[in-house]
Length: 188
Image 1 (cartoon, rainbow, N blue to C red):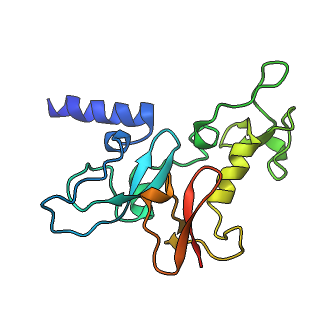
Image 2: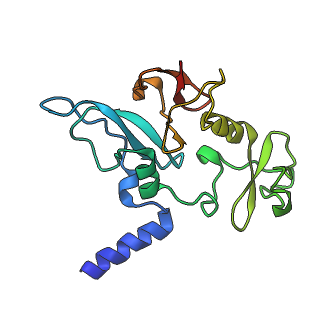
């Protein structure tokens, strides 16, 4: 029986790329009858393949709940070069011939897609034409610098991203701002 359970677990990992706990929904927990303070925790979103900050109430919730973005990434993220998907799960952009691939030779420039609305995204063995607005917008949201030129809040060199400003508690000296897809904390 144990062998069957282990086989099912590893089959799940090969097919889906993430452990089962990474597919659990975000659960903020509760502050009722809880002796712990609310804090920022991190939840893996399998639709976008990104760890998000959220306000954890202190007790309860589920196991898709990590103390740092690094812990979340270590437990749930997959290597982007082997996980063939455009940013945020956006569908690839097809050209007039129904092709969504681009040449592996233009990696430095990101060119090679027929549409001006697409940029070439590279993986280990292939490249896809992905939506330029989504790819560039996500990179801007993940940047270390806010539009004002001031620093973004980071933990372990990773910009803390939340789905909304309601989901994050910025540290003292920072204010939440909305980016193209995510919210983040900017230095005052």
